[in-house]
Image (cartoon, rainbow, N blue to C red):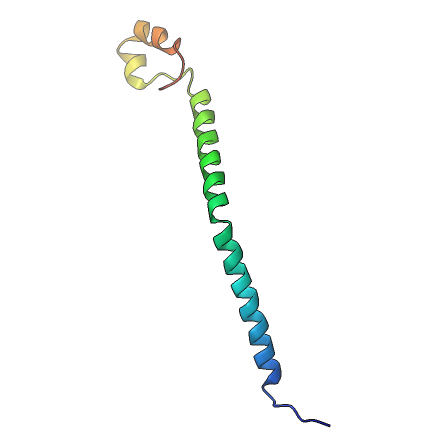
Length: 80
């Protein structure tokens, strides 16, 4: 019967953990371009939703100083 070194299991466990960490790092780096695209899409969707939410918005200045002009400006739609 062949004897094994007492640290064999530790070395094997560390090798497997290192391999898993390396594969995770490769996967994250490969997904970086996809994440940028997804982030841009989410940002633009949020901007569009915010624009739709603000269609009838009037600022304090428009409400207090010029209520007649404020109603005409809200008809064109949105803040931008």
